[in-house]
Amino acid sequence: MQSARATGRIRGVTPDVLEQTLLRVVDASLRLSVMIWGPPGVGKSSVVREVAEQRKLPFVDLRISQLAPTDLRGLPVPDGGVARWLPPEFLPRSGKGVLFLDEINLAPPAVQAIAQQLVLDRRVGSYLLPEEWFVWAAGNRREDRAAVYDMPAPLANRFLHFNVEPNLEAFLRYAARRELPELLLGFLAFRPTLLHKLDPGSPAWPSPRSWEMAGRLLRADLPLAAAIGGPAADEVAAYSRVVHSLPDVVSILNGAGSGLSFPQEPSQRYAMTFALAGRPETVAQAVNAFVWLCERSDAEWGRLFAGQVLERMRNKKLEAKFIQAAVKQPALVRFLGEYRELVRPD
Figure 1 (cartoon, helix red, strand yellow):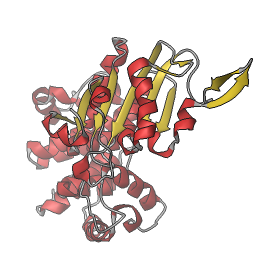
Figure 2: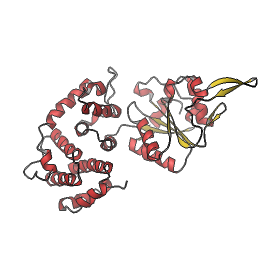
Figure 3: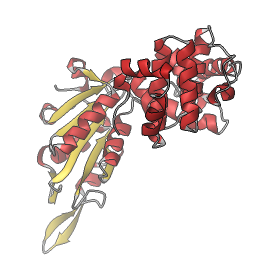
């Protein structure tokens, strides 16, 4: 592969598959350089950072496109009649970690040439990268309207290549762990094409990264258009009016929703399912919501609910208690038996 244009021949992976792959690379101590391709905002950098955090590895994030050649190579200083290069302080000197070269193909050729030495030889001038550090990189593709430079063939051939694609289910699981507002998650489940929709005519447009920013704006009661653009923000506003017309969610969580029915309108069904999954604070509330939903809806809604609530229970360290309580409910035993893949160990 000689340039970003060749990434079309790489089989796409979802962000969570990439995460699991990188975790296995770390666990197997494979010192193979990794190149992650994908559109802006798909979560490339977030996945790498999460892998480093999960394995408690130091993480050095270098935005290569913002560096000059001397920033990587260092500065020459006189030493006994010869010039000695002093490497920059941000390059690691010891231990084990992840050196991440982000936006590598946005960098001009002179900077890429220096980065190439780190990838090919694990050194720049007199600087030598410690043996136990991983070298991973990421970049956008030419078809994503990014102003990228072609990657030299010798550099590209030293990488393992992964092409990350937006994936709603993977994002919903990630967003549940991050406890993004259920309003946005329900909206995206209802309008999945808006998970990632590049708008060349606007600086703000929907992507996994901008939806995460939108969640922070929503909590601060600030306009979402600054993150996801006007058209998507208008749709969220219309959807929020649907949410406000839902049956009494609090009563259902508290086990007093026997007289309430599951909505018939699709947007209300998504809103109801994510509200029930996102609002429980206790195991009892989560089980009450699960039973209520399974008794009144089809399996697809129960599966959508279960995927979300299990991630949130995991995040609260309550998954085991939730499962123990759920299997005591006759309405849930059959469901949990049919969807065992939803339950996984931490």
